[in-house]
Amino acid sequence: MRYLRLIAVGVSFRVREFTVSRWFLLMCLLQPVIFATIAFYMFKAGGRPGTLLYAALGAGMMGIWSSTLFGSGGALQWNRWQGTLELLVAAPPPFIVVLLPLTIATSITGAYSLLATVFWGRVFFDVPLHLVHPALFLLAVPAAVLSLGLMGLLMASSFILYRHANALSNLLEYPVWVATGLLFPLALLPGWVAPISWLLAPRWGIDAIRHSALGGSVWFPIAMCALTGAVYLGLAAVFLRVFERAARARATLALT
Amino acid sequence: MSFLRIFFVGGLISYRALFNWIRPWIYIPTMLGAPLFQIVFFTYLGRYSQAADDDAFFIVGNAVQVCGMSCVYGMTMAVANERWFGTLGPLLASPANRVAVFLGRGVPVFANGLLVSAFGFAVGAVLLGFRPPLHSLPALLLVVSLTTVSCTTFGMVLGCIGLRSKDFFFAANLAYFLMLLFCGVNIPFSVLPGWMSAIGHCLPLTHGIEAAREIAGGGDLADVSGLLWTELGIAVAYAAAGYLFFRLLETASRRSAVLDAF
Figure 1: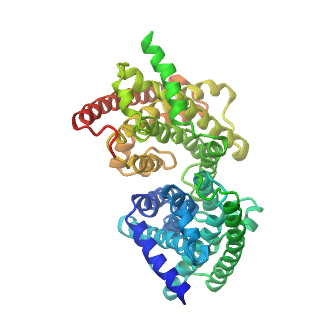
Figure 2: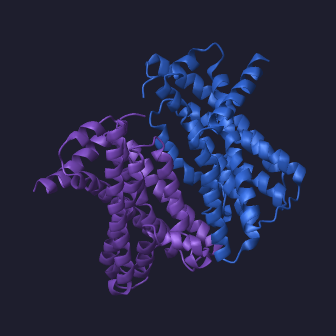
Figure 3: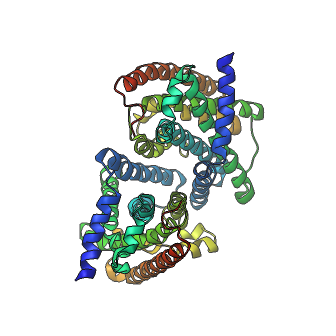
């Protein structure tokens, strides 16, 4: 119960912290809206206006991924720079309980981008907002956000030994957009990409959100969000245990 | 002679000093990895959206635009980081010619931008089957070089923001993304509203990308001379604006004693 309270308070605190950050404003509002606009005009140029809601949802998911990637990937680095990483590690609760609210908050903040791209599309591009399964849509979005937050936890835990996590974050933004079919179907990509996408929560997240909005099976991708999230959580717990111990033993925890 | 020494040697030394943190494990993911996947992403999106007849439209557009990774971010940092590192005061206290100091730091950034763009074209050739005529390569190099220069001068203007504001990275990031939208990198101008097209034609990249597409499609330099002169004019205009901005902010910062203050 104490841990649940800590997670709830942590998530609330971090979401408020990120909401006033200009960096997250760029990541969660401006960048997704710009990419959504590019996609809208590209589909318009190609004479495919029927795909605009598809593009709006995909661009929103891109924003959730960017927010999670840079927020969670950079979480430890920011705490290193601010000199608070040792305090967090030394705090009585297990480190994973301290870190989890931060990574979930990055994906929750990222969910602004979904609202932003759908609103932008509706107001400026007349994107139809008819949802096939509105109730399931309300379930699919939190499932996607939570699974991405847990993926963020896995990234944060594995970046603990890598001092240049921000460079790795720069690299990983586009590949996941490509490999999870956020703006175009995976069928366009070479066959070997599909098995990789099965391991990535954004693929199941966007499937759940798109199927609930445009039609299709929703429960399977939601279940896959839950499964991938559980696997990320388990792996992150192991990684944190090993890497945190190694960083403390080598006295490299606070080194930037 | 002193002008040239400050321009080239000073520019190189400042680059080595301000970017001393660059290592292969930072450079490769950021400057090569991200552009690679950007080109792949937009080419596949282009295939799906059918926004253009062939992949070359997207490969050329993005391969030229990725020079902004160096020109926009690098140039912004090459100016603004003097303040961040606490070296702006000594720099401005020196009697060195300001034009040489200011423009000289664009030389290494330009070279890096050209390298990133060349890598982008190589990605297009190796992964996406981009095959421009061999005889067009020298002209393509000239076009990309000129476009990289104009993008560098645009970065100089953005860098000046960092002389007064803390949020220069915000401005640089926003500018980089907006260039994707306004400069015809992935969207044919025929579908953009007039006002967006008008803004795009005042920005660097736009004319250069159009010229590069024509050259890659088999055209020669004579066919794109108008576009190239316009791109050159834009480069000169941004360089002049950047320099004026730099001097204005320098004077204002001296007057209000906020050179190194955050």
